[in-house]
Image (cartoon, rainbow over all chains, first blue to last red; front, side, top):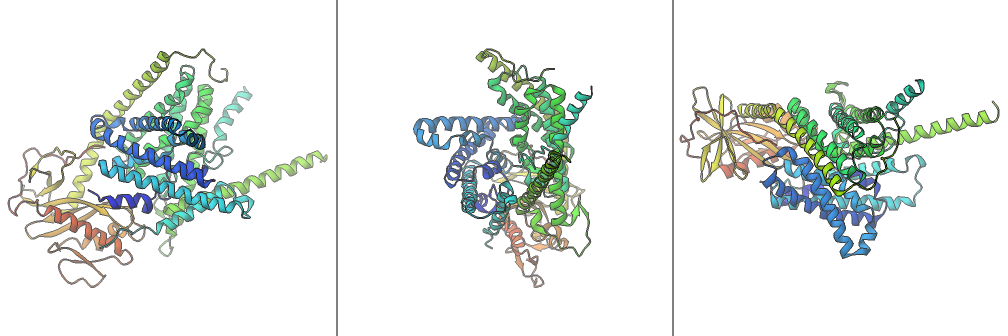
Amino acid sequence: MENLPWIFISALLVNNFVLTYFLGLCPFLGVSNSLETSARLGLATTFVMLVTALCAWVLNTYVLIHAPYLRLICFIVVIASTVQFIEMLIKKLSPALFRAMGIFLPLITTNCAILGLAIFATNRGYGFLEGIVYALGAGIGFTLALVLLAGLREESELSDVPRLIKGTAMNLIIAGILSMAFMGFAGLFSST
Amino acid sequence: MKKRDNRNYDELIKGIWRDNPVFVQVLGMCPMLAVTNSAINAIAMGMATFFVLVGSSFLVSSFRNWIPKQVRISCFIIIIATFVTVADYTLLALVPKVHKELGAFIPLIVANCMILGRQEAFSSRHPVRLAVLDAIGMAGGFLLALFSLGAIREILGDGALFGVNLFGANFEPWVIMILPPGGFLTLGLILLFFNWFKEKKDEFLADVAAAERSGS
Amino acid sequence: MTVGAHTEMPAPSSLRLVLTLAIAGLISGIAIIGIYESTLPTITANKARELREAVFKVLPGVSQMQQLVYRDGELVATEERRKDEQAVYGGYDQQGDFVGYAIPAAGPGFQDTIGLLYGYTPKDKLVVGMEVLESRETPGLGDKIYKDADFVGSFSALSIEPEIVAVKKGSKARPNEIDAITGATISSKAVVRIINETHSEWSERLPRSGSEPPLGETEPAGAGELP
């Protein structure tokens, strides 16, 4: 029903998961002190989102029609298993990468952005293709927001920041300004 | 008797101010900022979270000696998800308009790290009464935090509180406040205020201690 | 009551672990099914009532309605709608005569997707009503698409031939033009575009004027799907 470019751009920029929907704030505020870790976490999250979107579609189409009330529990199980599986995969394929990512992989499990993705996609009735495109847009948008904040934080490490505002307060205010900037993307698809 | 009363009271109160989950521990606001664009939405979400937290704490604490350590997180999540689903359907049936406003954020209560954190850190290690008191306190503090956020954003961004117009027709609402940036900015400024307050308090206590030491 | 960490015990067997999870799952399942079943009638009734109100709003003069699913090349009056099927709602008056269609439509607005329902009478090819069902447009500006009574009212006798056009406020001249909202041009034009696009899809599917499906015997109270 909805066109794919709109779904992608909407999730990436116009209605960014972090800056518009406040999803994924835990890693956003916690992990964004390093540009490199942020990029890695973002990438891993995008991958988990893709897999989750796929599983959610399968579940919704074949299983949950008969038992819609089990949706929440099923999604949680899927997400936890996916993260576990990816952890094992990365450990096997690239131990160096696994060491570099450390604690962040299990953290993805509690990332509300992934559960949010599954729920939003379900509520909007996205099909197979739409779900994939949505997950891509959301994941890249999440990564973008994380990387932007990380970059700004790294810069401000060397600046003379008032003691009171240092820490989460400052990060939130920066995030607020970022969010305002992203509001400028609204109307991107308004060709008449 | 007095000591136990104090303990109970302490558990209850600590969540409201001293260890407020949002403002002090900075926990669990992940999916919550989205619903604080008005006071009534904030309260609805706060009450739903209250129900989930108290219910889960009660069950987790009651069964704490029966749940093996290895599967405890999974059990906690099953319990929490059940309460959230119950809350979701109950809201949908009783107040569909509110449910529509809160939308997909009700199921997201499951991802609220504060609830899982509380089970792991407290409810699974303490008897039922203390666990429930702790939950009530934390949830109360959470509700208070959400309400302050929601009220500030609604008053500044809409000129109203609970839908009741406060300022009359000439008030130019500060619309950004009910939009996402407003959520970030408001929380950031409130945290700033808390930092300032904490610092002043520490200074004051340090002065008092110094005065006592130098022998009043 | 002692306060302490988890009781020390030898590592529990796998059976014990699985059993615990299974019991937890079972109790959880029962609780969830219980709440679902007990709230189902209320939720269904609420949805039906909401749909009914929206349809009656966009089709003045109707007092009965039924769902019309587009299946195998024609409109079928039925409660059941399969996942990939599109549907509209037929509105009928007191006597059971056909009045018009209520057609759901959606598309990108300024901020996010706008969902709406519009009423259409094929006899004179007019749009007779529009109701915004969901929108996330900017408060104070874009949200006027449902808050501005003049804008909503301008959809009450709008010609759909060749298509609706939104023009600068005050310069409406032809029967297929409406005034856009000042300061919310994009949102207004989005509404118009959504209706035009949806209608070009449906105009090929709607039967010839005069041969609409009659009101069925069993009057469904507006079937919908549960979440």
